Length: 150
Length: 150
Length: 150
Length: 150
View 1 (cartoon, each protein chain N blue to C red):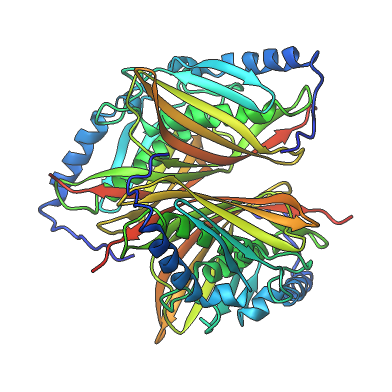
View 2 (view 1 turned 180 degrees about the horizontal axis):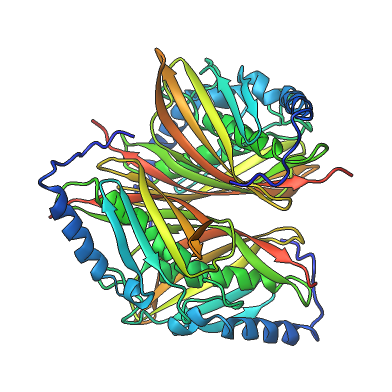
């Protein structure tokens, strides 16, 4: 992967701050008890517990939770390779569900497959953690559209 | 579309009851304030307000909300064409986001594209309602896997 | 659907000519024996026989054929709602295969779900015809990126 | 990844033979001049030149070619982790196109993300080679349905 819009080391902390501010403004992430566990250029991780209010009919993580943290992790991974002032919008996202979401915690790892100013192609893997053991429960692939500053 | 497992009119209320019970057991739907607005053979509608806790960073509906009600509407549409005792699991779902989710209410309309005992192919359209006017905000297509009673 | 870039009736033939020229330049369509059966604003149909050289290991239409004509029908449907001089590129396309591709002829019907200058969301349905009877064999949903004239 | 249906070393050649026989029976692969470059448990590579008859309107590889070899590589990767006698059918496949398909040769690398007797989740990456340099032109993710021997 070639990161087109590589930023200097001194700008990196600014980017992380901006991502953390945007994440904090997403009320759904607070509803899910989700936190930003890792922010690097091109890679972002979001963790979320399987709260009593985030479940499907059998008591496991609802696919809506899995999708939401995977989509957000992928979106912020895309944002992390864009210049200051940009935002991103998800235009499409596909999730393949690999296993039921059960365990202590879900972790979504978003990464950039192909950067670009018009479109950023992204992927996210979601894992369920039980006693420190990871199970791969979902694979997401999608497209983010950068929105330039006005 | 040929509905393989067509049920008689007298069985229809049973199916709707079963779907309503399953929906009621999905805690995420309660968290989102979502309700089952329509249950017919092959077509299910779910409505949800854009609650203060369901939003993305600009205050619009989070894609996780849009996905969750679209996925559930599609899943219950699949369940509505299966025999009593079956359940369904989402194996994959893709969402194309068409417009920002803003308005008074979101409505997800799930339908069956192709029924089957091994896989059910489904679609859902999600609309945002503002002053009674509908905006098409998302198109979902996916695959549900029927799980036979034990 | 609101077609943003509605063109006047007098321009419509120009658009169809341009689409037919582009189609004629796609050598893969000639390899497949495919023809443009219908070109209207927002809707394009492509027909193709299941040639001896277009098959999978059981002698049915290869998914590559189904995909190719579905993708092209969707792409030209997108082009048909864009102003003169534009081109389109597929950025992503998902196909759900509903039935084996067997019969006398395949027909792909592409349509525009959501027009736009940055992205056009499209859908295509592919049918197999046997003795005049249609079987729905594939559903494609995808995203086309308009490329403005230089 | 845990390969559920691990076969013994002595069976491995049989599996590769079976895959090579199936590939040889796909007439579309011959039309495309495609060859099976690598067959291992869970990983299959297919190579194809960009023949004069495999192109889109600008002379580059048609997305139908990219899709066809990616889908087949992913399908045979799935088959390689199934017991003797099984076949696989693609139920859905999404392709994200990352760059135009231009160069001397396309290479599709299919792999298994999640094996299973009911469904096998797969991925394929397609690269274009020019003077030995690889460009990542497509990412495919999809679902294969195993068909048990009768």
